[in-house]
Image 1 (spheres, helix red, strand yellow):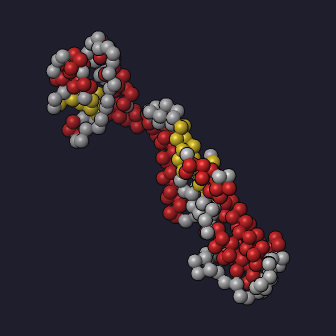
Image 2 (cartoon, one colour):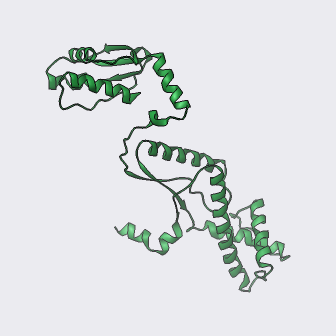
Length: 273
């Protein structure tokens, strides 16, 4: 609709001999009484053509050879040109949208400029919840809009795996694992993780490793066990998050590990840059 209107205005300006052609801005009026769409192009040409904006607006309207999509074309204020579309044109445009023709929504403002959008990025310490789903929907919708308007979009999931949260996850699941092995004395940390998924991951870990990491306090087993459980749980959580997002229809181009950024020295390099 904007493209059609701009093309009609551009043809009118060419017929009037305006050169070079100005940028034709369109805006939606504040109230419906001023039409469906409006342009201030006549006011921008006033100094160039040395005429009053209203006179230029009148010239533009007179020079229009194809006004069939408009029910009304009127001049308002200091020289705005207000356009009101016909019902037939609006219905035709709506039918195109409903039939899947999204060209009406496209406007190349990005010109393939690269944009990195990082969203969701939930800690890999448990299943996604409704808040994460909301962020996924919002982020994915933003990416789709950017792509439809000409940007080259990269979707990134930033994995927060460098902090203490993963250790707490390992300690929480290890406590559940030790309980399954029949060994008392291991408890979930006060700020640890609770839930059925903790017991489920502990059971999977035990099914894979048996009682290999079960040992009494003072042995090396607990430290090795917590580390092993942490690594196992980390991969399980990432796989679960990927699966949930996939079922939700959200995909990512890159998954960036915070821990690997530190290990490669990229964080320090960025700070020093």
